[in-house]
Every structure is written in structure tokens, then in C-alpha cells.
Image (cartoon, rainbow, N blue to C red; front, side):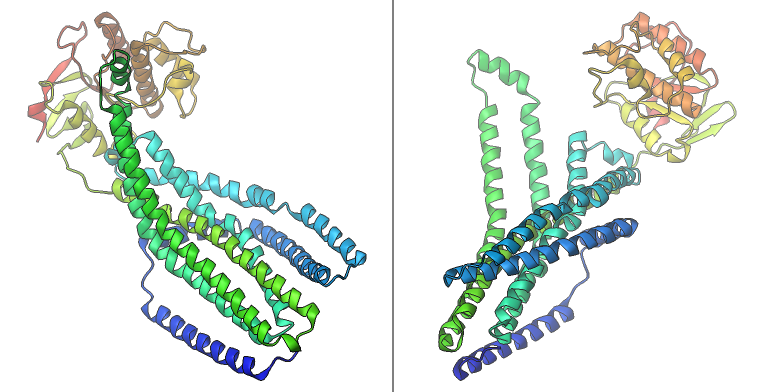
Length: 543
């Protein structure tokens, strides 16, 4: 260890003592005032811990790989610092250069950690997070799920996935930079342990500012961003849904407000992004300032003690300080990405809360009996029963609520919703009818004959007509009904886009396929049908 002049020792002693005292107060106040973690982060850490426990053997292998990689990287950086320092002094060592070359090659060969991370940890966790997301959807209220489009659900699923893998994915980068910080600190300690301690204290401040403060602030930021982006997305979708009108009127040179509204939304979105980014920019500036101060203080100490420090040590310490600035900036970028991704888990928590939100309840009590079902005290026998009522009287709403509130009987109920967001283009009818359910060829053939679709079921339909789509949707509901042996089938306007003659044929086929089931349906065809049915008015069955 090389001595330094007395005045600088006193100065740095006082400085370090003050910093240590401040850190002690900071840690004490942090633990004293530490609040309970938010629900978002509590759920996040629980889910992440589950995956890490599940793949603990894989993590051990990856940890060993990280250790080997960081050791090689640390030795390489240490050797590089010494080699460059000697070059500054005009000393050339081909032996050191050959060693450094070998270390570079070894570092390149061992730099497969990203591949190992993807194979053994990231990809399995991605799969599990998506499965967990789908399972969580089944725990909420189905009627609330209707408020989300498939694109919105996919965005939230991806945010959840990104949040969960953010920690493991950033582990390799941050761990290597921490090792590099340690290596550079050791290099500085060759002149003074106190200088090295000073670097460690500033490192503490760095992680205190980034990890502890920013994580909490980013939670609120992500909530605001999630709400705002939902707003921007809905507004944009509303405009794009009217794109056909825009196309027509623009071609006849008739002014519309579509473009102006897109510009307004984009400008508003840009302003919000600028505001949210400003929060991070302030932290970047603070961290950059901290790194520069760190370098300046070490340099000032070197200047004060320059006469007592060998020349070969000066370049080593300055190189180490320069590398420390790079390390801090590198970690800053990694941490900002990790924290932002973790905060995006808030979108998934928000979805769960909305799915579990209480909704307006319409009384719809369903009970099964030997001859059919009883709905709100009204007996309905096996066979067709038409639910009648004026347009807008709430028939569709009642049928959906009846299904939603009869979860205990879902093993006996099949339903055809009035509308569907499912994509039917460029698929063959057989695959569309079976969907993602168990394949049963016998049931599939029965259903296909039932829906009167005069197409080869094994051939792809590039763009089915409205009537063909409706027949396929009926086929999906009937196939589900056969799989669970449904005793109660709800058909909400099965005649949409289907002519009266074909509709009559399909309904006769359905009753022949399900002679011992109650089939409750709505229609715009009224009584102009040629099959037997009973009627019940919506106003009499609703309570």
C-alpha cells in the first residue's frame, strides 16, 4: 500500500465518516418508515418466486455459468486495465498482449449465457406466464371479460410476461457489471483502501436512488400510463372503425374530421410520453452526476498525493474510475428497463380487479328437473321454447346473465352468443367447429350434417359469407353441447344472416339431435317457422 499525504487522509476520513453516518441514518429511516409492499408488487414477487422455485435446478446451472463468465470477464478487464496503463507509460509487453488475446477469445467462447438463459429459464417461464394468465381469466366474472377485446388481452398478457422475465433476464447483465465494479474498486484499492471505500459508498447511493426510490415512483407512473394508453387505444380504435366512411368521403373530396382527431390523439399521447420520460431523465442526470462526482473526488485525491504515488499506479486508478462510469451507465440502462417492465405487471393486476368487479345483477335463477328446467319459477319443458319480446326489451342481456349466473350448471349448458369476435377466414370448417376442444369425429359429422353447410368440411374457406359464418357458429355451440351432453341449450338469434327455409331445416335437425334437451332461443323470424315450439315472454320471466 502506498502512503498518501496527511492532509488528504484527514479530508477523506472526514468525508467518508460523514457519508457513513448519512447512510446509517438513511438505512434506519428506510426500515423504520418502510410500508407494506403494494398489492401489485406483492402479487408479482409471489408469482416470480413460484417460477424460480419450479426451475431451481435450471437456475443453479445458469448461476454456475454466470459465475464462470463473470470470473473470465473480470480477469479480462483487470488484465486490460494493466495493459492499457503500461501503454500510457510507453511499456509494451507482448506476453501480456498474448494473454489478453487469449482471454478475449475465451470470453467470446463463454459468452453463451443469453442462449442458456433462453433455453433453460426464459422460454419455460414465458410459457408458464401465459398459462397462468389464461387460468386467471377463468377466476373472474365472465360478463366483465366481454369488455376486453382479444388485442387488449394479448397486450396485457405480453406485459405480464415481460414483467415476470424482467428480473431473470436482467440478472446476467447486472451481475456482470457488479463484478466489474468490484474489480475496478480492487484496482483503486491498490493505492488507498479509503478511496475504494469511497467508491463503495457511492455505489450504495446509486442503487438506493435507482432501486428503492424509482421502483415505488414507477408504480404510480405505470398506473397512469396504463390508463392513458387504454384511453388512447380506445379513441384510435373508434376512429379506425369508421375508416370505410373516411375512405368514401375522402375520395369524393368531402371533408371529414378523421385525420384531425388522429392528430389530436397523437399529440396528446406524445405530450404524455414526454412527461413520463422526464421522470426517468431526471434520474439519468442524477446518476450521471453521481458517477462524475465519484471520478472527480478520486482524481482530486490523486492530485493532492501525486508525489507519493508511483506513476504506474496513476493510470491504473484513472482507467478503473473511467470503467466505473461505464459500469454505472450500463447498469442504469438495464435497471430502467427492468423496473419499467416490472411496473407493467400493474396492467395484469388491474385486469384481475376489473374481472372481479361486481356487476349489476339481473335475477335469473335456473334449476333442472326431470322434464326440463325452471327459470325464475317458470317451467320450461324439453324441446323448443322461443323467448319473445320487443326489440330492445333485454332478451340478449337476460340470456347472457342466465348463463353467467348459472356457473354451477355449466357442465349441462351450451350457448350460442348473438355475436362473436372470432376470425373465420382462411380456415376449414372442421377445425372451426372443433376449435380447441377434444376431437370427436362422430360428433363432428353429426353437427356438420345438422348445420346445412354445403361445403367440403376439410377444405379451407378463404372468406366465408355471413350465412356460412353463422352456420359455423351454430356448429360450434352444438359440438360443445354434444361433448358435455348439454340438457339446456341457449341460441341467441341463430337465424342471423340465414334464410327462412335453411333456418327451418337447421332447427329441425337440432331438435332431432337433442330431443331430450331444453332449447331456448330468440329470433327475428317470429312465428313463420315450420317446427313446433312453445313461447315465453321476456317481461314475464324477468324479475
